[in-house]
Image (tube, rainbow, N blue to C red; front, side, top):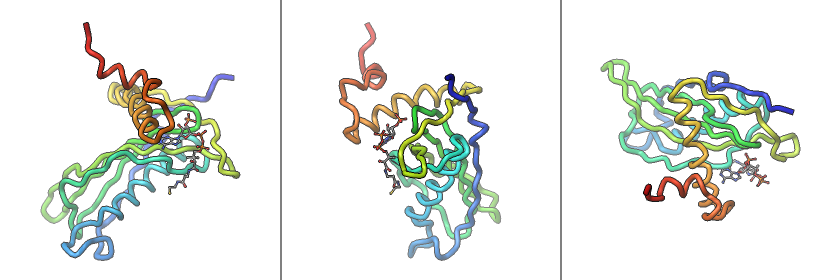
Length: 174
Ligand SMILES: CC(C)(COP(=O)(O)OP(=O)(O)OC[C@H]1O[C@@H](n2cnc3c(N)ncnc32)[C@H](O)[C@@H]1OP(=O)(O)O)[C@@H](O)C(=O)NCCC(=O)NCCS
């Protein structure tokens, strides 16, 4: 039977948080762990909306911290599913920090998370396909296969020689 199809729009989630004293380190900047928690939560909601299932975090790709987010800033997190495989879904999350009194806003982080839809016993279960609609969604969709292969190779769940799409980007064109 053909799989149900859903779009990125179906899973889009926006979450807004205010950085309070309990969220910060001794320099009054947002703690990395608190931000990662918010990123995990917003991405999990996007994956739930795509699959209509319970989901568990399977992996989070590299998250680097360049610019600090300060006490009192408003943090907006936007997440959407970029591609679905059998039971797993890749979610792209973007983070923006805004200082309302000074009128400044910047994109502070982005990352990819992978979630797996599971049944009540915690066993992986099939999810709908994702159908990209815009050129940006198409680009994210195509890259998702290479990113999946990279994270499965790093997790020792795939042999490097089987990561054909990933290898193809390193092969010299003749
Ligand atoms: C994620 C989990 C459900 C995978 O279960 P499993 O028995 O290994 O199942 P499978 O090998 O069939 O893998 C299921 C899917 O997970 C994906 N997956 C497993 N490990 C992965 C990883 N490290 N990165 C990305 N995807 C991963 C597989 O590629 C597969 O995707 P597909 O069905 O779309 O092809 C299981 O490892 C688990 O429950 N982990 C704990 C989750 C958790 O507690 N998260 C909170 C973080 S502390």
